[in-house]
Image (cartoon, rainbow, N blue to C red; front, side, top):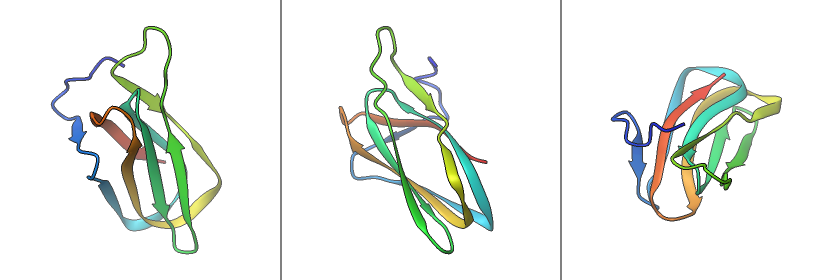
Length: 103
């Protein structure tokens, strides 16, 4: 994905988080996210009965730059999710998010 400079992308500092509140709460089976390809990020999914963490990145491959897309499945799904939080774990300190979709 080469939409690195798209206006809707969010550029993050290392101490910032992006949190999405879900109203109404829903069951999440999969996450669809694009983030800077050479960094590592943690998604925290806050469900009614459990909190689950998913780590994505980095995607280091020849010719890959900009944003990388990840679509981790949650098995079993997380029920009655009230929020999803994204924060950068490590990388080059130039963190960015293209999109975050919960399914």
